[in-house]
Length: 286
Image (spheres, rainbow, N blue to C red):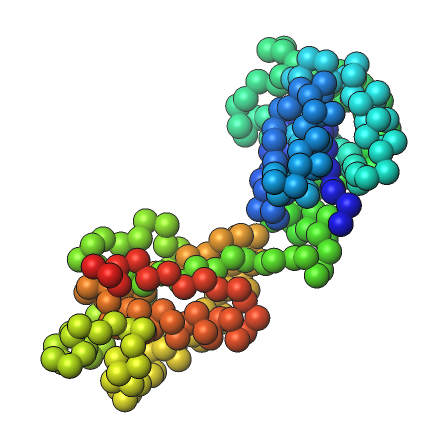
């Protein structure tokens, strides 16, 4: 596989930071505001197998003092390499869109404290030679963060390489606290508790006797079915909104029996449905 390098640049306020976040979520090694003269040194990481880097995205903007003068020559050197796929992504937006964004964020334009329209015009003129070098130019005037993400995924990630939303199902015990990174919480403390069955107390939800005990419960079976159906409904909506990571917490009192068994069932259901779900049992050994 030929290493891929995407250099993200463009007008201030056009969405470069959002684009960088997208590439990071898509598995690119990302570095923002890298000085142009360090780019040749940076790509040497591709040659070091131990680095594990095969795709990288670099953010470069007009705040980097030597950008305008040095970038054309550096980019010509990159394009001359036969062992690297280098792409310049240039983001821009209409004057009206840029002025609106600066008004909403109340941030000063990087070219000075003067009036924003003049600063935008000056930056656009300065960056015109860089724009002419770009392989991909995107006008973000009418894009949201989510539509920009979808566009970049379509352009830079092949269908076979696309990973979609990364799912983690975490079992836990409420007595040890709720997982702070959970996006969804399912409480299963209402289910029959194997802890009070002497022969099951020392086992966990990973053990067959505990699983069989819960599967004999109508409430447990229906709970898993309803939780699975809810995830089937919600996860495509999370993906549509561009959420890269979703953590589902499943909690019981101690985090050893009910939550473990239910989390395992949900993980199997999601993997059968084409997702890549990782199941973690936070408190099973406590």
